[in-house]
Image 1 (cartoon, rainbow, N blue to C red):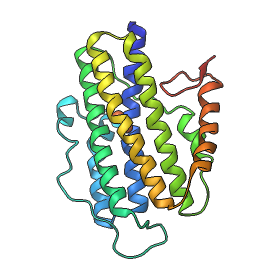
Image 2 (tube, helix red, strand yellow):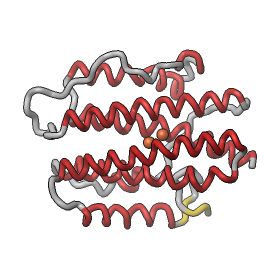
Image 3 (tube, rainbow, N blue to C red):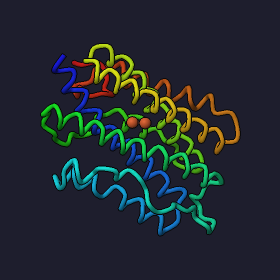
Image 4 (cartoon, rainbow, N blue to C red):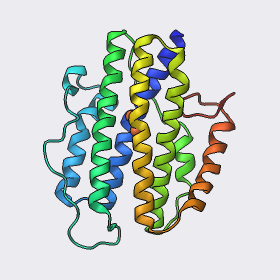
Length: 230
Ligand SMILES: [Fe+2]
Ligand SMILES: [Fe+2]
């Protein structure tokens, strides 16, 4: 059980920040104005300093998941701007807040349990799906949102599978994470459908196939989202 605890906490923490970063880059590219783009980068600074530059500690990250400034949509029409900017921004900002809070919560547990913290690298999972993103808009954005939905839904499933094997505190905590990942998965899918404005079942089925291959084929890199351990 200790190995499972160590393995999952370590992986989950990194994944939580990654999930937040992915959402942040998505709205920076597609939806927000220049000033807001800067605000978003600054929001992540203390977290990235901690993870990649070993600067700061748990205290320096306390309550940093709240965003003090408002985020605005781009006003001038640009090629990448989606007609759903504001909804995209609202859902993603909420998602980022939650992921940053998850990151902090996991870190807190690790500190309390004296689990050494070190940054880890990403596995093949997300990259393996992103390779299949269409090269033109708005389809590229729709694909990225579908991928986001798969990542969140798979996290949800893996938390549910892991939870019963952990101690009571971690069990409860993973179930609480699972609930918000389920909401994130729905938000991504709703946005993908709204922006497409037409049936996207075929595209979802395509990514379901790609994703299934990634989680069911042998994978040398054992992580939260990896395939079968070799
Ligand atoms: Fe999360
Ligand atoms: Fe999530």
